[in-house]
Structures are given as C-alpha cells and as structure tokens.
Length: 466
Ligand SMILES: Cc1cc2nc3c(=O)[nH]c(=O)nc-3n(C[C@H](O)[C@H](O)[C@H](O)COP(=O)(O)OP(=O)(O)OC[C@H]3O[C@@H](n4cnc5c(N)ncnc54)[C@H](O)[C@@H]3O)c2cc1C
Image 1: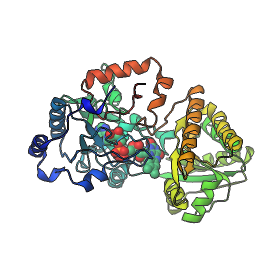
Image 2 (image 1 turned 45 degrees about the horizontal axis):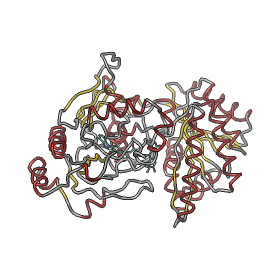
Image 3 (image 1 turned 135 degrees about the vertical axis):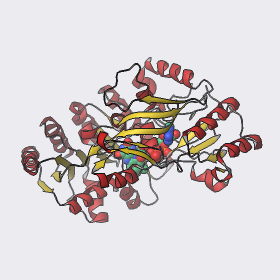
Image 4 (image 1 turned 180 degrees about the vertical axis):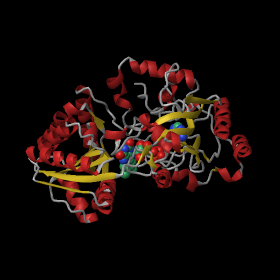
C-alpha cells in the first residue's frame, strides 16, 4: 500500500535540478500555479503538488523522470485537467508535470492521413488547423481536452460510434518511462503485428505506466455531405429501442446521442435550440454522396416513426448542424449553470448495445422507486450512459454515490464496464476488482515492472488496500 511516507519531499536541491533541466521560467512553486493544477472537473477534493513544471521536449520529460525516480518523488502528468474521475489530481504531492507548453504539431503526413503532435495540443485546436487540409482527428470529448490526456484516459465522445475511441485513432507514441528511458511504441504503418502491443498498454493507463511525449494519430477525411437528425420520443424506452434499431440497420451513424426531456428543455431555454420536452436522439450521418445521405435519412425517419417518435426532423444546413452539436457539447455546462448552488455527481458506464434497454430501464426504476432526481445523457450508439445526480448537501452526495454504485454493478452484471470513457482515476478504483478479478493482479505486476518505485501518478486505478 502506498503511503505519503513512501515518497521524498521536493526540497531546494530538487528545485535547483529541475531549474537546470527546464530553465527558471518553467518551474513554479507559487500558490497560484499549485492551486490551478490541484483538481480536475470532478467532485474529488483538490490536492496540492509541491512544484509545477512545464517541459518543452520529450528529452526534458525523461530527465525529470530520471531525477524523480532516483529520489522517489511522485510525478503526476497534466493535460488541461478536464477529467471527471480525479485522474490528474496529485494526491501524493510531488511534481505536477503539465503539457501546456508542448502544443506543437510536429508534422502533418497528409498523404498517409496522419499527424504527429506534442501531447499538450487540444483536439479542437488540432482540428481547426487540420480543417484546411480537409482532415480531422475523430475522437471528440466535449471539452478541449489535450491529445495526451485523451490517450491517457482513452477518451471517446460523440463520434466514437463510427470512428472509434482514442485507442482506435493512434498509431505510434513516444513514451518516457519512470527510469528516464525514452521509447517509441507502435508504428506509422496501419497494420502492425510485430510483437506485444505496447502502444495500447500505455493508452488508457492514465499516466501510471509512462508519460506520452509525442503521438502519431490517424486522421479521417472530412465527409463532403453531412446531416444532423433529431427524433423526439415520449419515453426513454421507445428512444432506446430506436437506438438499437438504428445501430442494427447498417446505416452507420457518425453520432447517435440520447438526451432526456429535462436536458432538451434546458438546451432550448439556454441555447435557443428548437427542441420540445421529449427524450431526444441527436444523430449525424456522413456520406460521400448526397443521394445516399438522403436515402439513409429517409430510412432513419421510418425506423424512428415506427418505434413511436413523436417528431423527426433533419438538416444539412451547416450552421444549424453546428448549433445543434454546440448545444449538445455544452449540455453539461448548461445543466450546471441552470442549478446554481448544486453539485453534480456524474456516472459513466457502458454495456453491449443489446443490454442498453435493460440498463436504462434499471436507471428509470431506481429513480422512480427512490424518488430521486437524476438526469440522463449518453453516447447511446456506444451503449454508454451518463447519469447525473444533483446534490446540495452531504446526505444527497452520499446518496448519489450509492446510486452510482448500484448502476456500476448493474452495468458489470450486463457484461459492461464501470467506465465507458472517463477512465478510473480515483472514483472508479473501488470497482476494479469487480470488473477485472485476477486480471487486476496482472495489471499490478505490469505497474511494478515499469514503475517499481510507484512514482507515476500514484493513487490512481488500483483500489486502496483494505
Ligand atoms: C464538459 C465535459 C465533457 C466531457 N465529455 C467527455 C466525453 O464526451 N468523452 C470523454 O471521453 N471524456 C469526456 N470528458 C472528460 C475529459 O475531457 C477527458 O477525460 C479528457 O481525455 C481529459 O483530457 P485532459 O487533457 O483534460 O487531461 P487531464 O484531465 O489533465 O489528464 C487526464 C489523465 O491523463 C494523464 N495525462 C495527461 N497528459 C498525459 C501525458 N502526456 N502522458 C501520460 N498521461 C497523461 C493525467 O495524469 C490524467 O490521469 C468531459 C469532461 C468535461 C469537463
């Protein structure tokens, strides 16, 4: 079990060595910098690091790790801190290593549909630059998360249903190991079968096995024809049935999202989106041909109406489409703004698509049985749901944790997972034994091999010893 005493405090000697590696302007112990990097977007309590550092090259990251490893000092990597499970909180203090000054595009390999980037670039900033070449990096979490944070959490988002999660959109990475070695994992070849898949060992490891210092990503050509469609339903059950049917139709949606009636009302009031108080499916379709797009939309309309949609509309107008997706992305902030003085506990589970109706039915039953208020929004096409519990006091917070646990256990019983996309961090660590059983011991052995002193993002992924 890790304890605070397992680590060495950062002293003046360490600060001097960090300054030698990085220069004075890239090392800070000011309270403002420590506070800015002490908590993510979750409800988990803040924790102060002892020093914040801004490396600019992979070699500098490797040197910092070599120093930290030698002195047993914890190192927590930081993208922009938009995690929702406490993933980048420096719970044991030490060095907070932020990628805010490693934001370059190293090279666009347009003919190969690839780009090599430093880890601190935000995916929205990257896509704004790639758009000029008609390309984009597909995983799309709502926030302007960094590529490094996305790969470390294996983040997903609204376009995962068609283009995959972060793990499906990376080919090669440079990784700094705890002992200061700098290695390349993966290859720029689309097909790779040369030995153990170390690339995907580091993806989703939340900075606990190594630190990503460069990544080559897969890109997708921007489709010439796109449409957005909205289908409104009286009940969650009908909407969820339509999700399964659209997925089974072979229409290959590029996004298939579910928002409940309360979210629909909030988006209408805050963003002026033309929505009624109904459970609503937000969909997007991409195509190389206008006619096939129109035919696909006609089929989706039929499916939704047959399954009880009370309204259906679609648009190919780019401004309207952008407004819809902007509103969908802003839905969490809008909900938070609409509930001042209220915290939100966000649950994130995923199940195989056939089990989605049962999972959603279970959440609805829980809400009805216990008379709790909870909102639902989800990447329905991936079988992923976020149940959002508002809480105004300690008792309500504890209750939301209890419901979170019940929903996680239900998802696991349906062959699902405790976390579809937000990662384990602190919040989901208690469920890792339930999810992985003896495989968790194998993960511990890998951790021990790559990070024997436990300096990399300690306190994450593995449940605390009882
Ligand atoms: C409004 C909102 C909506 C969101 N929607 C989604 C969504 O739809 N889908 C989704 O998947 N997530 C979503 N998230 C969660 C979050 O945006 C993602 O988890 C994202 O990947 C975090 O990226 P970040 O750059 O903020 O990383 P951080 O939060 O700073 O760090 C994430 C983890 O990665 C580690 N890390 C950071 N950089 C590196 C690196 N270079 N090498 C190794 N480890 C590193 C950190 O230590 C930490 O463990 C949402 C969050 C918010 C606030």
